[in-house]
Image (tube, rainbow, N blue to C red):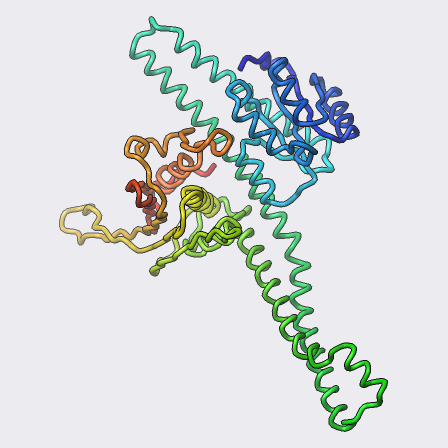
Amino acid sequence: MNSNLTPTTKGNILVVDDTPNNLRLLSEMLTDRGYKVRQALNGQMALATLHRLPPDLILLDINMPGMNGYEVCQKIKADYQTRDIPIIFISALDDVLDKVKAFQIGGGDYITKPFQVEEVIARVENQLKIRRLSLQLQEKVERLQQSERIQRDKASQLEDTLHKLKYTQSQLIQSEKMSSLGRISAGISHEINNPISFISGNLTCAEQYFKCLIHLLEKYQKIYPQPQPEIQDIIEDIELDFLLDDWPKLIYSMEVGVNRICQIVRSLQVFSRQNEAKLKPIDIHESIDHTLILLHHRLKSRGEADGIEAIKDYHHLPKVTCYASEMNQVFMNILSNAIDALANKPPPRVITISTQIKQEEKSQIQEGEDPVLADSAIIKIADNGCGIPAEILQKIFDPFFTTKPVGSGTGLGLSISYQIIVERHGGKIKCNSTLGKGTELVIELPIISEGLGASP
């Protein structure tokens, strides 16, 4: 799509919100900073104006009547002429799953209401910067295609440069998304932890208090076996026998719920690992388990359809020295892809996760020295989906390659995972697939990582 966006122009922004006050506030905020701003009160109006005068950026509200922001975004990303326009979602929804959905359908960023001026401006400028880089890259590609007289060697050189630019851009987009998700996860877990701890502690006290009251009541009934009629009426009205029987069940169900929330909070803390940017030994099994907890909503059954069963076949693994948050990102990407592969498959739907240690003899450093055994952790994640054709299998680690519908995936997940495993940790990753039977991703990580990439 053509755009007038240049390094010296501020940009043309379309603001879509069904609340006039929000439209006015955002428009004034952006106009004061030199941006050209247009307004739309609903999704239909926004779609109608896109082709007449394409904006450089869209600020899109989620909760709108008729057509919500997610639906508007999907239509924009499905249109070849508008799919490259960056979208920033604006919403009062602050749930991490809402934000993950916004990114999954093609959103570039997410602003929570009530918004702050400096945050809005910073995120707008960041998306426009990415847009400028994308347009510059597109212009270079177009010039390359039009230049048929360029010698083969020079063309190959330029193609390599473009590939590096594209790869750098993919890292920028993915790292920004994961950083945002990490901050969201860390913030939510921090906010939830204190009230849940308070509730959990008081449940124990409530249970003990009730036992004391029951003991008192039993003594009273023993000493006064024939209560007065007024007291007998109250006993019948409150169904005392049922109350005494049901109260322990009620406390137990509350304890189960609190434990579940504590488990999710712990998983969010492990997944975000905001203060763990350095190499450190981690428990691979713990990382996988916490990732499965965060994906539980996608594994459980919905309606009459059976859910997806996650089978774990863990063998003993020592801790692996790696970048913890990056490894969590790898497991999230691969497990999410496995779930996607089973979305339309009839039961049974199964994901199998297995681990083991692999030992190899390293070459001797000097003649006469004893051979050295090098331990590697092998992690296999397999699904029983429809499998991947051979012609596609060799492309799955390429940046931006995806078989998903437009707006459903960026083609960055496995590419970034390959970089993290191979380049950052000196490991290996490969994909085995059989049509009609399923796909298996095999990760091999050195227990003591050597030759690791530099810290980001």
